Image (tube, rainbow, N blue to C red; front, side):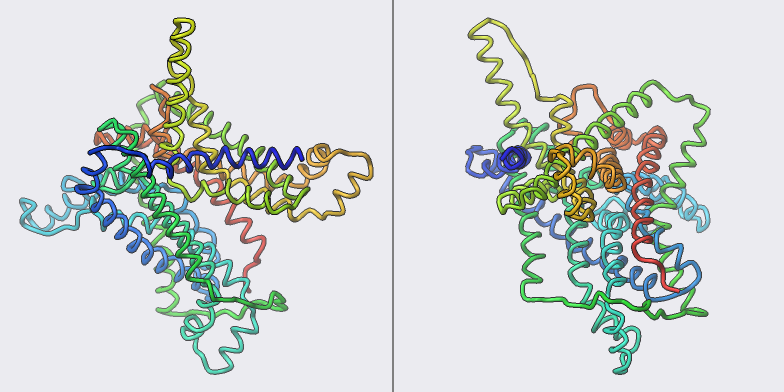
Length: 541
């Protein structure tokens, strides 16, 4: 009963920001909402739809193509690309936006070199694509988010039945026809899941679209809240964005409503691979290298060059403070997320009731919700609570309490937990399901309580899963920008916020060190994830 009550209450607490945002639809915001609805809301919707469409095409093209090449083909460097294609996931899209803008704008090295080579004198003498545009945002999102599709699609290809693919070949299907008629239909659930994750991250973004001047819901929420001071209207914008997310989830479910995918799990031998030679091998090599080059190596190299060129400048107290703030927030959130995930996963294991399964799924919804939406859903009830306490204390004791929770680390960490608990829960639940139930029974027969069994039996056996959960949440918090930007305490910036502020002021050189720090920290869980996939699925000969 104790575990059931704890999980249900925890789920209700985590879902409360989403409930607050949805309830704002019924609130009256006066002329502000009507003004937004008739002026900027159509633009927010249009830009969001174009972003979703463009990113969908980009991540599927890159992710599915590279997953097929490294799984079913052998060419120079294919073993290296198997894990290297995940690395761009470590680079937040806003870092690429700041870096490529500095390189490709009018006074950047690329256009400056072109003008020197061809003798052009002014911008009207030639045409050059504008990176700070909707198309530029789609390109950068595709380069940083395709690993979601690549990772899940590759695992699906690896787990597909060998006999099914060999049957298609025996019926005369060539390599590419086998892809279209057998491999892709079997991988459709994985592709849809990876695509949904990529689109959720696209809708969550703030730094890239704000810097590129592309009005979306996240920029509108921030502008309405801080620029206009309208909490209710900002919450209603957040509610519309939330409906977009729910619609995306339902669309993904609906697309598979009548589909059933069955395949044998008895793989007695490895998949037969296509050995590419000559121009085919080098074409495959170039296709796999290009997203890594553009999504990680080029921006990472440019940031490293900027940091080295200004290495003579000592680290300021500001940078050290920013790093400490980021590490403290990420460390505390990761630790709390793992503890709460253990409680929830183990509670479901002890009492596999329907209400517990439902509560856990509800608590895990936060990962699908953009950080700006969560921030609004947290700040509104917290500010009302603070104001109510302050009014009561003034009336009773003539003492002002001020803001107790608004703009504090507590509120910020709670926002992180709502957003990223699902990440740690997935890793913890995966590790817990690998432990045989007989160990629980043996532990209980020796007189151990459920809590003692968890701490002394299960936790040591789940060391790898707990470490994975800890690292994933840690890095996600380090990169998170929208929620941090809205909720952070006064004069309490993080590396991500400082990078955003420096870039907004066109001071990319000063942003290089904190940006590079975020990038390097983000590589750790990506490398760990690549190693786990490689261990679970040994490479084909």
